[in-house]
Length: 316
Image (spheres, rainbow, N blue to C red):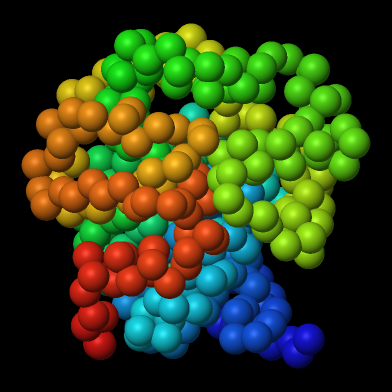
């Protein structure tokens, strides 16, 4: 592995950014940056001067989940950045973990790394949930957005009340909201519970042993941070305020929603009626034969769908 150092990204008054060191592996560089909201590590690939795509992971996962898609987007001319979200080492492990905070993290990172040009935001799972919030609150910072595996949150919550099968699929969320017990059980037996979630959510896909080893190492260093996202779902004033915003504030950023038709975590049926929450261009597409981790199962297909939507990069 070779090493290199990058200059600090452009500062802005809102981000107060300071870059850390960079490591290079197979065209992918690992960076860190200090924003006003915390310290964030991220992986980067592509020409530093090219238009930026930010890719946000979910649970139980980490930034490397997007490497196959990043390789294809960067080959098409984009600069790709995949941060470790708040609560995932080596980024800050401090909360809060509500979607407004995480969405603001993504908006702040976008402003820091591309202060003059709106970026493309891609999110999977919790990264997708935060994407809806980010583009709703900060539309001026995003040119287009793509969400994977999670429909608009207001549509999901409305449809969830009518779907017994989805309530059963989502029962794990209630468990992860509990105090103390998940911290002990989730990491036990080498994260056996995480293995089961991956098997259930993407039934025809098996991640490589090396990938799962790195993922579990990240989770082990991060606990209980990843659980904070679920605990932020407990009833509270913040939770109620976010639910009202989800239902009442439309999204004016063009957005593409891709969803594996065989997703064992969230059924595509949970996206019914979500078009009402969008005022700009919006498309929603189920992808047959793919599950929850669709971007790993068929990165070529997912990357091509993203490129078809966001178009060729406009070079500065």
